[in-house]
Image (cartoon, rainbow, N blue to C red; front, side, top):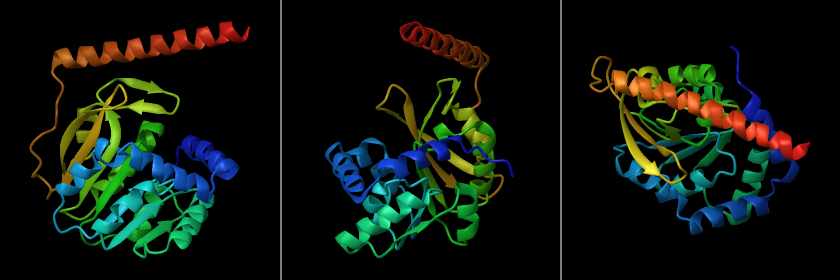
Length: 247
């Protein structure tokens, strides 16, 4: 299976170069001070869950989300392709004690879910991970998500409904998400924290039960296309300005 490894390679280089237990500690303290758990929609998402015992976070990085959700679940699993940051997370857990229900899997997102092979409903999350990965590989990942047990839930802290396709920044429409998660009833939270709307919640339904596909009207399709052209134009202008400053 072909994989998009650009984001992984970039983050692995960062993790190897400067990620330490102190870094993890600072990230957790900063996100706590900024109330990121609530602002990014995770508090609201957890309130919507029913009888879900396992949380799976994709691309867990510093682990801040796992440490916040650990009180709500029997099992909390971070899937992360970079071994270095997993090692740092384990050191942090050892230092603070507790968090016995938190574990890590050193794999990419698709292989990680297959290794867990859940047979009961799970809660699966991302925290601005999929926006850094190209469409073809996100589609393959969503096929895996679509096979999760009925009753599972997802919450993707990802941006949507602004047509941007550029290097490591990919924003998709509501219809795109609905089309690639055919057995999930989706709800879009419409959070506006970063200049984009974000927050995708979903519930896995029996096949044929889905009722809302978020189809774009002809006018919305035209606006989507024009928005994409504008995003490309803006990116070219920014690139030209950087070149002029360098020269």
